Length: 219
Figure: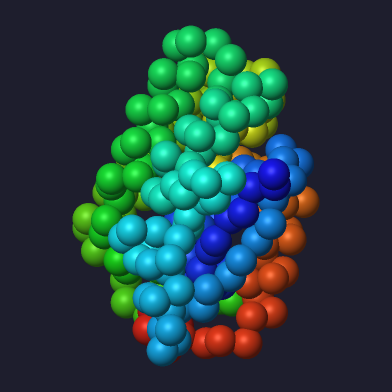
């Protein structure tokens, strides 16, 4: 049975992007269902696929799974032949730690620069706060450390594209869409991710969506 992934708007849903990008990049067959945000039936429809009333949600036969990081782990277990996480134990542990940090952190940057694939790159209306700038600095340091210690075999965080790159994909959109100044090394990594066919496909779909949510466009 083919996996079914339920997501929200490709223009705005950072959490939906992560498992979608992973599945698409590794060419794992899946069906896609999009539930647009802020519609009269949005929560009702989302509750049918997720007990939290939020997406993404993955269905595999009778199993219904929610939370992006849990979905990535399930995909990794279901397709062990795919290098969803780095193969080396130390690199894999580091990638999981960094992914958990992404899952729980960087709240200032998230708040001040919402994911927006409709946005033409330009600075946010208000200068970034000290907290958001600290988030950017930590992200750049994390990228550099992962690349230096584990990523020498390729252009991604751990050499080859992995779940860790998928976890940080929305950050790449934020850095790009809000024209945030980053180092040449960070920019090169961003360009590598944004050149992926899966990224290009998501970006195209998001930019072409007709629903515009004013809250996301106000930054």
